[in-house]
Image 1 (cartoon, one colour):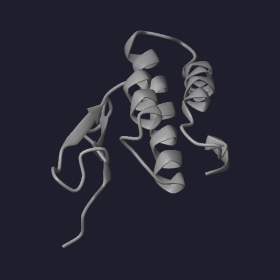
Image 2 (tube, helix red, strand yellow; image 1 turned 60 degrees about the vertical axis):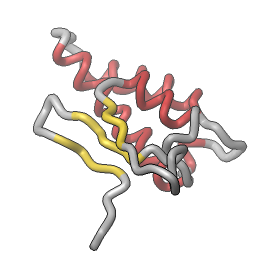
Image 3 (cartoon, helix red, strand yellow; image 1 turned 90 degrees about the horizontal axis):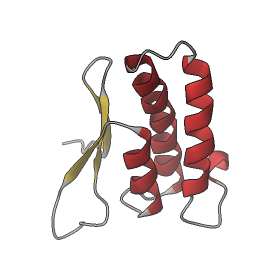
Length: 101
């Protein structure tokens, strides 16, 4: 049986579901991330761990930023995605640069 630790749910607008690594091994709880800030929080608080997983969560966070902007009627999703990427870059919980992951 494969265990999905990170999954995109629904069509756009969608959400990222992750297994909350802080709860393991005692519990298996998932977090549903629907915007940039919850993705930032998940990375910063180590709900998602490991460089590849952190990089993937940040990439999905950029999508969430563009998605949120489009839902709000913004005309420039690319600018919103860049702003989301800049914000997510400040979340790195370790010494390794997030965008090297």
